[in-house]
Length: 106
View 1 (tube, rainbow, N blue to C red):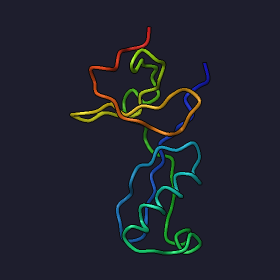
View 2: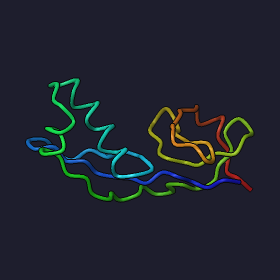
View 3: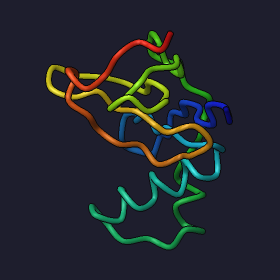
View 4: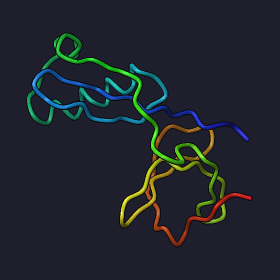
């Protein structure tokens, strides 16, 4: 089985608190942050590079642990009161599932 490819990165933009992004590289985390920032104010990526900083974040409890979602292998990313966020092995796009569809991998 291919492994868990994500890491947690904190992106800080000048004038805003840091925000966590799950990505396979710091550059991908920065691109995700840039897309989010552009919904507030459009800037070029070059300009965004000058006002942002990427640091390795702290992984939440259970981050990357093997789980089963709908009977298929996956890795835990996060959860809240309503959904479990997960990623499939060898992939970087996250999905959401209802907690009743998630089981611990044996």
